[in-house]
Image 1 (cartoon, helix red, strand yellow):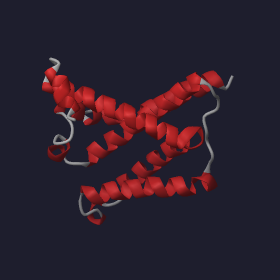
Image 2: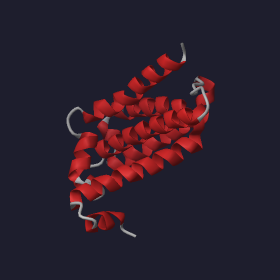
Image 3: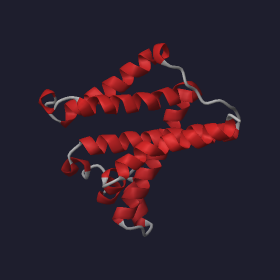
Length: 166
């Protein structure tokens, strides 16, 4: 079933229905991602995303054949660092209850949006807009948006941990 087509039949414009579909997909992926990782791995994976992005950013261009190799290396680094991360550091979110699940969901939502911003920053624009609308592409990659998506999880961590660790 084409959810975007269903939304457009309800009177939403094609662009808006694509954006709503993207947000709902990100929310669903975030929920599953947060539940699979849980409070013990979600913070560690965030650090691994930052480290992996830093590493692929400094690799000389002649070693990267195309954007596919950059994406594969990025995901391989995230997975590899996550597998061996217990040796480096162990961060987790503390707490329990329904508010804790909301915190895990929000952190996983920010991580999924960060990863999508990284992916669509690497993939050429012509290919990316085949998968998402031009507006959504702009929200993820235009101007300062990659920096904002990089900073939001850190700001969220700062305020959540500051509030709950007193």
